Image (tube, rainbow, N blue to C red; front, top):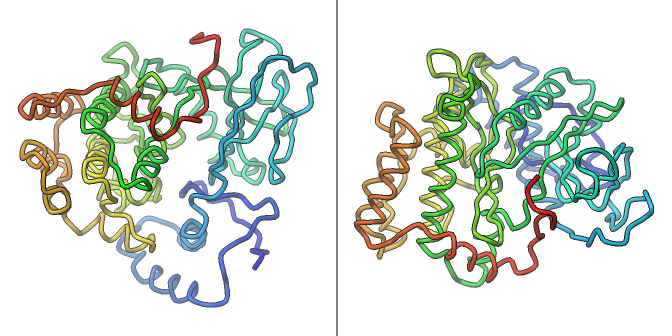
Length: 411
């Protein structure tokens, strides 16, 4: 049935939830109230600093996320050559055109709890003639100061920290009432959709491709955590490392995307303003993230460890249909040995994952560089090496129709 309740902007919980544009909401015929009551009881110790209004909003978003998290994930690609009209082309029935200023909208690629992503052609300015990605703050959140500021911060962070393994942000556009930013068109496919396609065929990604993907992720995290290895005073934690935020390009290059939950690190190496809010993708949160405690670079490393375990095991680690159960598993349950689900798993990776997935931050790797070095050593001991060629082959096999990058290449 239709979800007619007004949606409350929830800046503290940007799960990937499709904003309804005439779409279907969760079934309210029964079960949701029971789930909410159970979650409410468990919410107190989990979010001790959260406001009551935030807790109610989180319950609502969790219920929506369960039903809609993977909604509207369709991707489209239209050749830019030959277009002369400023009218949007290739829009799906659920898409609504908006004033994108110097850009011609092509198609909507995805929509999340805080923003939607569009393919567009630049008609003017330094990007003229290029195909780019536009990330637009959802209209329902324009009146929420926290969301507006975090969106602006994402643009600042992305423009300030430029690295081959990070998606590049070009510019922020404030054209009232619209607020959006332009980013490079990467091409390729996310690790989430790539692994799902492989599993559907009863296959798994080659271990060498997995090692390359995680090595690239750790390289990007090292750059963020250290402010470009000391080149900038801006040091960040990503805050939402998950397979949908890691893109594998057709040439095997890997890019970490979405700095929407990134937070600057203070002098002590933790986030500067922890507010007790639950932010991130539940199945990839660190235990301290689930408990709404201050985060550090080690929180990102735990998320990277979850992703490594899942790519090697070829199955989810903590994810459950119930978001609350997912959060409980992250907080309380140790990761099962890799060999319990992949009997051929090399022992070197078993030892590495025990440290990467330690619930106690003090027992994890000290830095992304240390994690990456241990991963390379484990691969060397097992006769495996990180290979962009192997990952490129996986993209070609499992995502042959993946969007291509901007044909003009990097700016």
